[in-house]
Length: 279
Length: 279
Image 1 (cartoon, each protein chain N blue to C red):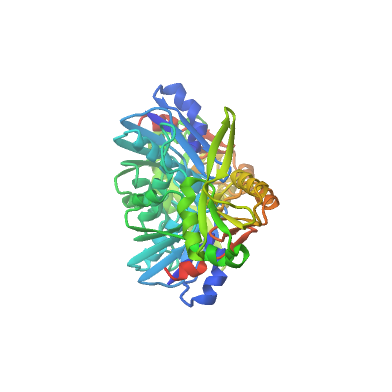
Image 2 (cartoon, rainbow over the protein chains, first blue to last red):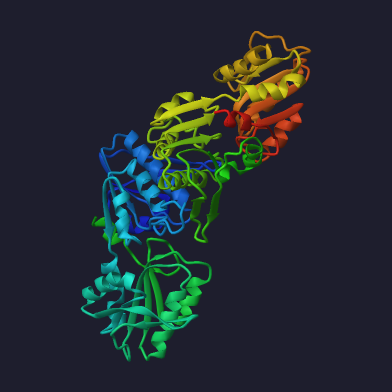
C-alpha cells in the first residue's frame, strides 16, 4: 500500500494511474499551524511517499505523523520513500560547532520507518546514519530516457569530478562517452572550467548534476561549451532546488533545462514515479 | 550551560540577566528554507531551551539540530526545556486513523535529549512517551505571584473539571478558595456554565487554564461571573495560543487577561524564566 504525503501530492495522480494500492489520507493544518493527519484504512505494510522540499520541516514532521498513524493502525513494516531529502547537503562539519543535519533527519525518520529510499543523495555515505535499511535510488534510467533522442550521439558531462558517477550512469545507459569538468586556476583570482579529455566540437552535450540551486556553475559550463563549438547543450539535475531567478538564468544559457519531479518545479519534466512504483 | 534556541529568544535577555552560563549559538536559515545551527563552544552537559510555538515544526527540527551539534562537540548529557510543547493537544485517537502526534514529538526529542522539561502539559499522561526522564513543570508559583495583590481574598476557578488541579495549585499558594465550572444542559441545544459550590458575589475571581486559543469558554465564563455579581474577573493561562482576535475578545470581557511567556504574545506578562533557571 502506498500513502502519499503532502510533499508528494504532485506525484499522486501519476501514481494512481499506475497503481491501485493507494491508502487515502486526510492531511490538514489547524489554525495554530499544527499539522493533522489521518489514514483512512490500515495496512500491515505501507510505503509512505513524502518529498521534503520547502517547507521542509513541515514535510518531515508530517512524515513522522503519518508513520505514527500507520503504526497506531497496526502497521508492522513501514517504508519511507523520500524523493528529495531535506538537509542532505549539511552532511559534515565544515566549521566547528555545526550540526550534521542529515544525520538528525535520518535518525528521526528511523523512529517510525524500517526502510528509507531516497533519490540521488548528495552524499551517499550519509545513508549510514539511517538505523534501518537505506537505499539510494539513481534517476539515471529516467534521465537517459528523457534525453536519448535529443542527445543523439552526444556526450554526457559532470560539472565536477564529484558528480562523475552520475554522468557515467546516464552515459552508460545511452552507450555514450562521458567525462567531467575540472577547474583550472588561471590567475590568483580567476578559475576556468574545462572538460577533461573530450572533444565537444559539433557534439550535443548533456551536463548532469544532483542539485541545481543558483545555477551559476551550470551557466558557466554551458557558456564555455558553446564557445568550444558544442552543438546543443542540455542541463539536467535530479533535484531542482532553484534559488530565485535560477530557472531563467540557466534556461537562457542552454538549449534545455530539465529536472526530475522529486521537487515540483516548472521544469520538472522527468518523472521518478515509475522508479517509485518499482521499488 | 544553557543554549537558547530561536523559539526561546524572547526569554534570552532575562535568562542572561540571571545566569552567566549561556552558550552562544548561530542560527540562520539558508535561502532554500533549511535551518543552519552552530554552537560556539562545547559543554559536557547542556540545557537547550526551545519553545515550539508557530512555526512549530521549524522549532522542533531546530531543537534536534542543536542536539546534534552539541553531541558532535562531545556533550554527554542533554536536557531539553520546552516551555510550550507543540502537538500536546493531539494526545489521543479521536477518529480512527489519527496520529498521536505528541507521541511522535516526544520520541523525536528523545533521540538527542536525556531529559525533557515542559510547562503545564495539556495531558500529563503523555509524558510516558518520552524515552528518558520527563518532567511537567507547574507555572502556579509564577501565576500566583502575579495575581496575589490583584486578587486579594478572591476565588480561583477552573473553566472545567479537567483543569481543576491547575486552579487548586494556584489557590493553595495564595491560601484562597477554589472550584471549577460545570456545564449544565438547559435545553437540547443550549448549555449553561455554572461555578460549582462557590459564591462569587462581591469576590474577585481568577479563571485558570492551560491554553487559550479562541477564548470562547473564557468569555462565556467571565460574562457569567459578572452577571452573578462577581468583583473583578481575571483570566490567566499558561500558553497563549491565541487564534486571531482572541486577545481582543477575551480582554473586552474581563478586567485583565494575562498568560506566561512560554509563547511570546502581547499579554505574556508572567515570566517562567525563574522556573527555567531553577530546574
